[in-house]
Image (cartoon, rainbow, N blue to C red; front, side, top):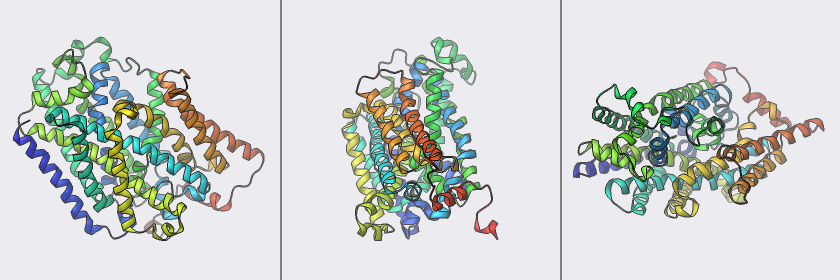
Length: 500
């Protein structure tokens, strides 16, 4: 890389740190730190939700998929996410701000104590924290690999640089810093992506290449489904994305919880869905053209994107594109860390000791848990090979473990599942975990698609089945649960302004 590229990256890091420091003055209490005061504009929430769904893994593991299998990446990832979010905007997403209005929650799992009981809440909270340790660690590893491909720096050093810059501004500015950096990163992402798109388009002969490259690629690369990414696999990913992007992934739930009211949450979700439907077509195009530009590349997952940028972009713009990839990863990891800190501070620590119950609104405690969590994820990234490296972490552990923790969290928001109680929540989570272990380590052979969806399906069957048994036995639903679910299910306007 040229000196101008290093300058661009350095300026990017200084901007992130500066935003964090500026945001410090806006954070007065834990509500500000975790939720931006519950007054986040819908358009900013939508942009933040969109940006927080990307990471360096898109430019590492998914770059390899684009190179090898082509257009199917857009179908199973981008289109699937877009559809999932749009469906969620009708069903799940409007319930998140209503939860905050009703219970004054600051974390997605906080309501579960009232809905099920302490034991189910703690199982979900602890399971989710462990899953996120792996997931965020994978994202640090991805950005370390990218930085190594661009600069030749050791992967561990790239992990430490990006991790500790994020640590600084996340622990100081909280969600204010997260939102402001997300917006700045969105601009960087769009700029960097467009620059590379047009540079590759020019190399391939102009705009007509958008349609003509497919004749030069392997026949299957233009198919909607290719290789292991079968219709069944795409359907399984749609189910996972529906649970994930509508709130099963906690940092994405927080984007909706932080909006003023349900109609803003809907708008936020639909903006994010539109961006997922359109932007990846531009972002992925250079990756799809990879076999034409660099035939026979041995390790496209690690090398493709760095080779694209260093080959086709002039000095300075390479640094901009790399900054865009940093922006994607840091957006998601900081958002995750802020949310996990809320879960630890509001849900886990108060259950361990009463002294934390009295301090769960403490800003100092919020910042401390954020620091500890980010440090642990950096350690996971440094020892990533133990967990199957980046692809294993993202497509294996996280995708398979998401469902068992998301089923009671998401289904618990709906009156139709009101008979599914504490026992149903606990056993469904454990059952999903056991199926994952059986398929991952105990020799139960299933297809990749079934391996993804089986833990979720198992959890859902146990959860709903025990609920039906409770209903048949006429087990009484607590009055406070009935009241909460009725409130969440209303279609009436519930903001103070509209109530007046």
